[in-house]
Length: 132
Image (cartoon, rainbow, N blue to C red):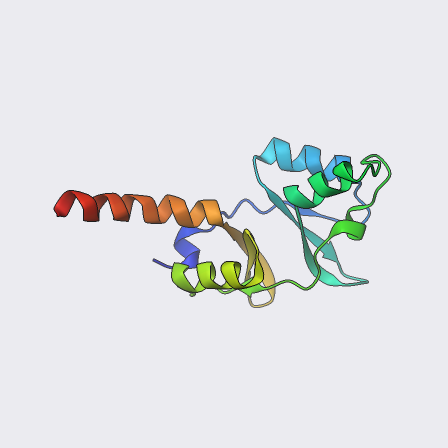
């Protein structure tokens, strides 16, 4: 199975000046664990995850004034839609990520998460168990 088959195409895109609270509210409303941060004048494409928001709040930073760009990962590993799920899982494990932005011709077209991969692999494992 390929990344294009497993990825979520619900891509939440925010700007670098969104506050952490705004980002968290948008992620919650969309039921996603990460947002693509587009900063055309700065770092380009980055990612802000629920863990980034949690860490900032845990450190006592104010989610109403902290800008998302201060917590965005900009050294991003991107996936291609044609990658296998094994390739995506390997990249996640190697980099310690739970989300990969999927790029097609330089544009974000989806996000693949550990949960997406598990959702795809779990039925296949169940079929293997049932057939033995």
